[in-house]
Image 1: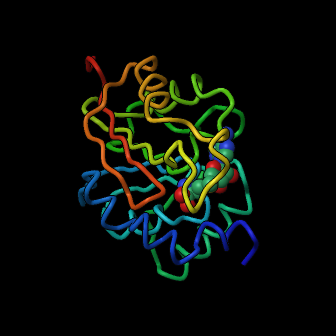
Image 2: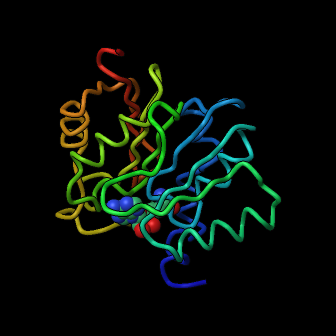
Length: 187
Ligand SMILES: C[S@@+](CC[C@H](N)C(=O)[O-])C[C@H]1O[C@@H](n2cnc3c(N)ncnc32)[C@H](O)[C@@H]1O
């Protein structure tokens, strides 16, 4: 385990994010395609691949992270996980492929989130959802300094500019919130 993996898989983080239950709450169903953008070590990618029989795409710009997910998928014989290395802000995926696009504690790390969100929109099916999990904007026991976090208002504004409206909003423990978006006016 490297330091990044230690942090992402800290038991208290997993307990709070509760990935399988959160994916169900977001609405992941057994035939859905899910794209986990900034998948890290697969904290959500792997449980998603146990819930749906369809494809789960794990995207990250860090090859080491993708390698960790690959090992986990092999250990569990999860054949529905496909891993994609992100270069720049482009996702190597066809248009309208995902029922759910998931971004867990990644949006605050993205410099050009406009292009990133345009890509998320491009790969989303009509009627699909984008789920964004981020740290609360205020100081909490875990997470980056508040100045590096993005507020709910800011997330909603960025998604609104990309063509999305809030569908659901809930907290995950004392550190995180989850916002679910749908297209404002599906084409
Ligand atoms: C804080 S980690 C979260 C990982 C995972 N979503 C989780 O919650 O366990 C953020 C991840 O986003 C990835 N990332 C950062 N910028 C990215 C980009 N432009 N494209 C794709 N992945 C990115 C990082 O490599 C890292 O694995």
